[in-house]
Amino acid sequence: MFILRKTKLGLGVIIAGVIFSSVISADTIEMFSGSILHGKITNEQKQFIKFLPEGKDKPIDTETIYTFRIKRTIKGNAYKEYLEAKDKCKTADDFYKLGDKCKSQKLADEANLMWGEAVKLDPEHEKSRKALGHKKESDKWLTPDETKESEGYVKFKDQWVKKDQLEKVKADDLKKQYASAHPINLKIGIIVDVDEAWLEGYKERIKGFAKFLWTASDGMLYLNNIDVSDMTGGGDFVVVTIDQKYLPGKDSEAYLSCSGQVEMSGLCSAAVFVRQCGFLKINHQRHDGCLLAKDAGSYAKFCDACLSKVMAFSANVKYRPDFPAEPPEVNIKCTNNSPKK
Ligand SMILES: [Zn+2]
Image 1 (spheres, rainbow, N blue to C red):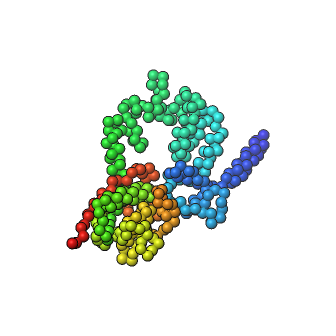
Image 2: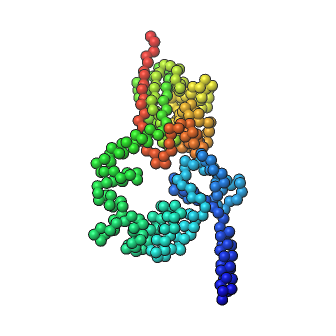
Image 3: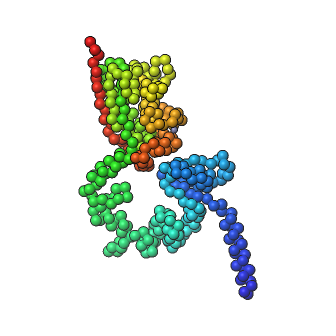
């Protein structure tokens, strides 16, 4: 009898070993965009990782993922095991136990999800209720959120604030978000004489450029102080033509001259303007792949490689996946010079 047991045990170990080795050790990455990637991290750097997606095994299939896009990294099989176990759960107890396992593996979101499932199946599942931090008051279970709300708080970005403080907290938060972006100040010289009406129109264009820059850089760069004067060739940007889209003799709307000034058309598109800003103000390498891939009507984005250069450029800049939709207001100062008589 004893020998038989031992044999059984031995067989069990062998089977488990075979199953285990067939699961290739993998990692899971959750992106801020919400997508979940399975595969193997082959190289980890501060700014990026190299990642071999599941099902691929050749080095040529390796992808570069910029770390600022990554919400979390789960090393090993924990996440895949969770996905598999989840499909097998049937009862509230099953979900509760899986929630506990998730917690022990530092999968906090999944733990809450599983306890939530248990409560859906059995609203009186006390262990799950307690794990979720629910409290019973006069026969009704209250979530921590409901408890806070009943005390007069509202939630703002995972933070509880008193209702009458909400507007102030929101305004402070916006200020903080703007402070973690990089301001760009520019002097723009227009070489010819223009009138007030033209300058007013140009102001509107600059506001459009500001919105484009903000969106293209995921809220990390903004136009701050823009000084516009006519009848001068001085400035970071020089408007050399106001009546044609392309520079005279060139098939481009703007051009970074060897003297470090951007020559541009007064009609140049936002994408071109923003790209030139990048060249001039953040040492953005010449990369035509991102901004000009789309027409100027839509808000094209810097690619991840360019965005990581923006972050490397300024220590102040912070990537926020939920950056505010509107940039800080751009201050535009126009000086309308009169021609000499
Ligand atoms: Zn790019």
